[in-house]
Length: 389
Image (cartoon, rainbow, N blue to C red; front, side, top):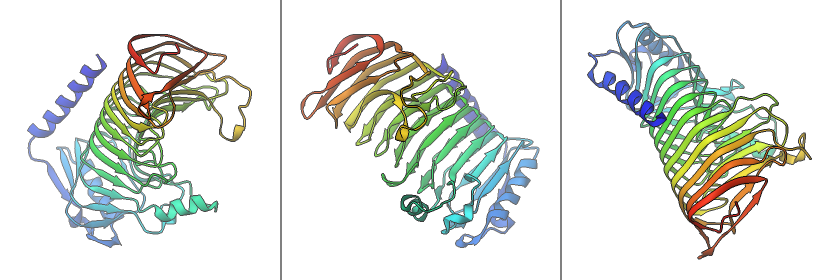
């Protein structure tokens, strides 16, 4: 049902885009932007957006070939009609990472609806920022490259994001979002460079993504419901993670999440659910991981409910996050660690209704092993390593 709803939304959205009358067009060059990669074009982009946003007919902001320097920018709504931002060229952030300040964003779409972001390359040029982080010096909080906050009916398609300071693409407090055919790249040792982070959102679909990062390929935070992910190539990176959850005592749960037809290569984790070892009202339920290939992946299948960095603030406590109704089906390939299936669930709130079906994971051409703590569930079909449920 969730998948049908998402497909219907995308069909209607794309049909409206293809069949609508000619857009009002706003070329950023006409508003003073310069495609030399050195001149600050931020105000020109914002003026083009403001004009498109005020248009009563569907409008397009057009970014032609060339390289455009953009500082932190907020593209605000609501707009009067549908707006498409079509990027052919490349947007680059200032080479001095401090120019983005402590805002937490580079490019932010706020309170918008019926917006499409199509194509282009977004290069945050964050190498100097990562070096600052690794040095232990005082650094800004970091800027997410592209953020949609309090938005609805959004399409993100065909873009490439490179070298983000922290997360590449963030979807927060949104509904009905389609992300398709994106390429998100940062070095495997770059800190906190999540590919896509989704939080407090519903009806998010990711279909077709090539993600190579220094953190989670996709991270799913509290309050996320009805999320569908397919055709994702992940690695290097930390896998697809639900969590970490339960850092706060009061949190919304995560439910109705599917990951399918996905390949992990050389990632630190495959499919992971992670929660802090402390009391919380959070939960995870009705999750399906299916039709997945693991290529030399550490921790291909893992639930970790004892997450406690540096053992501060949560030692000797059980996670309050309740995990139930999670299915792992048709997951095959190779593990980089001997324990390919690890369920380390909460002692105070054991995992329930966990299902393994048709699993085949090997370690160095031999069967891997599995580990279970505080968990209840069942297995069916051929399960390798031998199920510990």
